Length: 127
Image (cartoon, rainbow, N blue to C red):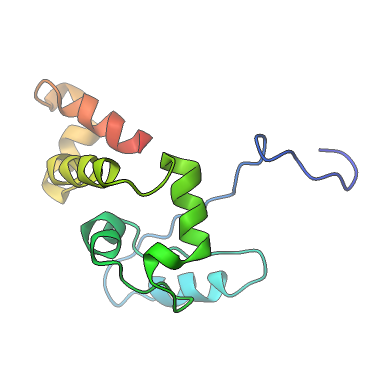
């Protein structure tokens, strides 16, 4: 966008930096350092959001409970219309079906996947 005009909310697409690393590689330190920079947010291990953070109403890095954190409330509202039980249950179910290292060959080569697996992966990605 030209000039100093901000993009309308409907056009704003955040820049996402995905950091992958094995245990004790420094990826968490890198994530936290980037998250401390102005305008940046570190999410942590997003895979844990539906496994335990949302269901357990764990504390956010800001100190608030997940359900009371202004950032996560906005995320849930924008992404799902709120953190409703049916969304959490669907995500948990899909996560159990497709988000395992042993499923990686089927994710990378869909023709290896049984019927329905690719649909589940796509829906998981949508959520």
